[in-house]
Length: 344
Image (tube, rainbow, N blue to C red; front, side, top):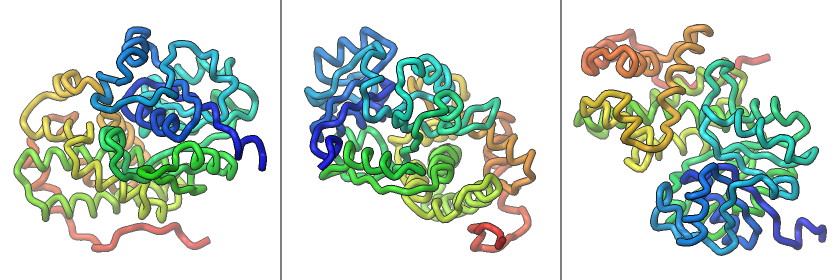
């Protein structure tokens, strides 16, 4: 057997938030040497002392093999580098660490967002900033707080590098966390970003007292919109029938643990967006993704009525019931609207 098959991996996780901590802890539990980088020296010291990320993942006991750090000295010797940084700071952090990386290192984005000015996904940014890296994306129905309490979950690692997928599976696969592999990097990543928009809509409808019929309709029509948009941008729409598509959509549209769902619920209670984001204390990627996707859909002339309606509520401050009424009275379309690529 090769060295990588018989010895523990060295793994770096960039980001001190909830999901980065959950992944770092899984890898440490699997016997790997894990370094989790964060900006705050105070947070790192607290995690070393208490063995808990009390701000972002309270109640999850951290494995002794997880080492909170505030420097990048560990990056160059890492077999895998997971980047769990909010999209607005993603490029800045990757740019700052690229001189610490070795040619061909394996970089995996776990961030479900879009860069506004360029409409680039996080894997695009990794390729921009570290062009000689091997790149992958990790996405799925992965609520960090549930993973932190060792509840059963699964995810998808997508890359055109089979070795990267194998290494990620080796690092993270365990008795409560299953890792599937795929090659549609763009589709997996796009699904993770788009579902955040519809989670806001689901939370909003729940706050208004709408029932399960409404939620079912909302999720089904959301999947149709996601597939239309995905096809237009070149993704494989069948990816959206898997964990990174409909799987992630279901969990974020149904769980109060979802940050984007909580944003929508607060909007439905009549709170203003600025207050909601401040009170949340964590990044809800869907707020900005909604703005970027709406602009892109307009540019490409992609039919996305839910995105258009939610944008009017969130950014146009239009009454929710007025927008809902107009959506319900719009022209009928086909039921099964899951769009497949055109025949070549």
